[in-house]
Structure formats: C-alpha cells, structure tokens
Length: 196
Length: 67
Image (tube, rainbow over all chains, first blue to last red; front, side):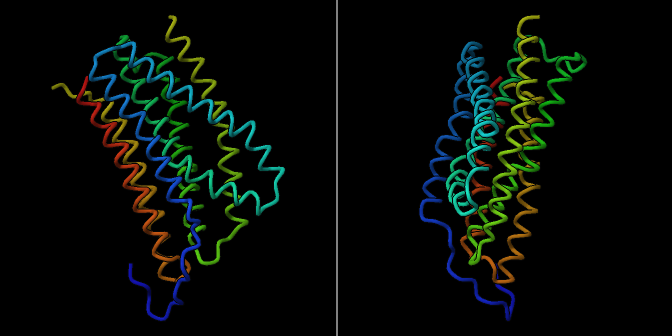
C-alpha cells in the first residue's frame, strides 16, 4: 500500500514481539476442530461426529461463560494500562480459536441433525435453533471479529489509542456474556432435539 | 461424491460474512496507512489473519463433500 504524498512517515510498529507467536498458537489450535470434523465425516462414524459437535459447542459455551462471568469482573477491576496489557495477549490468543470452535460446532450440528433425520426447517425447534445461531453468528462476525482486528490495528499504530483498546476489549468481554446466555438457550433446544 | 448443499451454504455464508467484514476493515486500515498512522505491519497482520480464516473455512468447506 503506497503512502499518500506528503503524509507523515509511520513510525516502526508497536506490535509486541509476542503477538505473532500467540497468533500462530491460536491458528495451530484453531485448525484442530475443522480437521477433527473432516476426520469424523471421513470415518462415517456418528459417535465421533457427535463427539466433535459436543466438544466444540461445549468449549465455545464454556469460553463465553468464562469471559462473561470471570474475565469481565477481572478487567473491570483493572486500570486501563493493565487492561491494554491483557488485550495485547488475549486478542491474538483467542483470534482463531473461538471462530473456529463456533463454525465447527454449527457445521457439525447440521450434519448431526441430518444424520438423525431432524433437519426439518419447518420444525419450530430447528427454527428456534436457527434463529439463535443467526444471532450468535451476527454477534461474532459483526462485533467480536471486527473489534479483535481493530485492537490489532490500534496496537500496530505508532500512537495506539489505549482508551479505545480498553473500550473494545471490555465490549468483547460483555458481548461474550450475552453469547453465553444465547448458548444456554441453544443447549436447551439441543437437549430437546436429542430426547424427542 | 455427494455434495451436502445445506452445510456448504452455511460455510459459504460464514466465509462471505468474514470477507465482507475484512474488506471494510482493510479499507479503514489502508486509510490509516495513507495518513501515516499505521505502519505496513498492521496491514501485513490483517492479510495473515485473513489467510488463517480462509484456511479454516476451506477445511470446513471440504466437509460438505464428505457426507
């Protein structure tokens, strides 16, 4: 990207040296759920497919509950510089892991519902699950992901706006709490679908 | 090899939403680079992040061919 003529030259990036390492770690863990799903489908084993769905969905829910109930209180009690230090580490570490868990849980859920003959789009329970999934996906792609990227971009600036970084981090953690509520609801729907 | 259309639609919808969001963010970041607020590493991180997500969704899209 060429710099505009006359624009001040950007100073060297302020991205901490551990950012790349944490991002690589996040990708290494984040690629495991979709690969496990490929293996489950290739093996034609419904038990294994169920396992992938339950563990990815459960981990996603657990993460959101932890963020919403634990991390939100910890962050709230910290001064802004300390929040920024947490954001510098939390954002790259969770960057690929959470979207990967969410996408794999949802995709494997579709396969599982089809396998059990429950993927009937006219069923009120499947419709309810679809609505909750849409809300979760909209929050993920509309707020979580852009906030995470904006935190990275802010950190890479020569003069990062620490207040903005702190605000975006708190917003993501609060959103995780609302995601946890929707996930508790979707687990209720899943439990119904599994039994009836 | 059968294609699972429902699952493929879900994965393509995820990937489409991702590309749309990244497109908006890239435009904003490119503006920051032009104004000299952001170094090239910011854009590089954005490209790597996009590649990482595309890799994850590519693997997920493969699953539509396995059912």
